[in-house]
Length: 193
Image 1 (cartoon, one colour):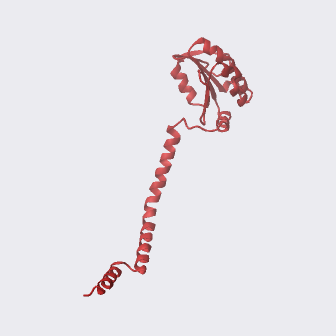
Image 2 (cartoon, helix red, strand yellow; image 1 turned 90 degrees about the vertical axis):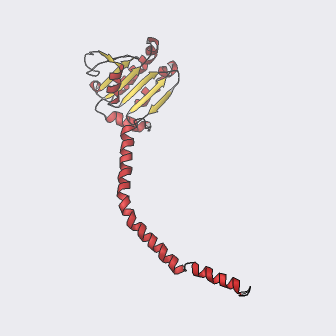
Image 3 (tube, one colour; image 1 turned 45 degrees about the vertical axis):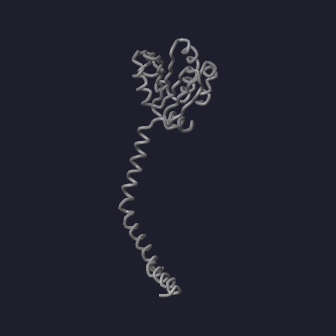
């Protein structure tokens, strides 16, 4: 074998080892057919898994933020709503009380007062009227956790005295934290109107 024959022989060997264009196309088509047969087997379980994950996310993660109009729509259409006023000491409550009153007045413009629950609570105790507002007020005193449980079960506004001003909106709950100046302005009452 001469030096000239060697490259020719190597070229022929490479061509024999490489599949032809027709064979490549047939292999590609076979892979696509295999995928088409596999896809239906896994599509239904994957869709079901995605639906389950979405449901768990919706039910177990209550702090998903949303827009104020979404919250307000849920709040206005509910059969009962709540206002929860939280404070650490009486001077803080003194700043919150006028804002809470203003919020209740705004809510009462569009619904029967007996469908409004108000919870006033410090770190341990809660005061509320089991029959809602609008009746002769019968005040009950229970642990704060009891009132939080009631408030969580219906669309609610949580008014909390804080050194920082912030608002968190979820589909059924509105958390308003504010200092003395924020509570005095009480912008949330205007937004509810």
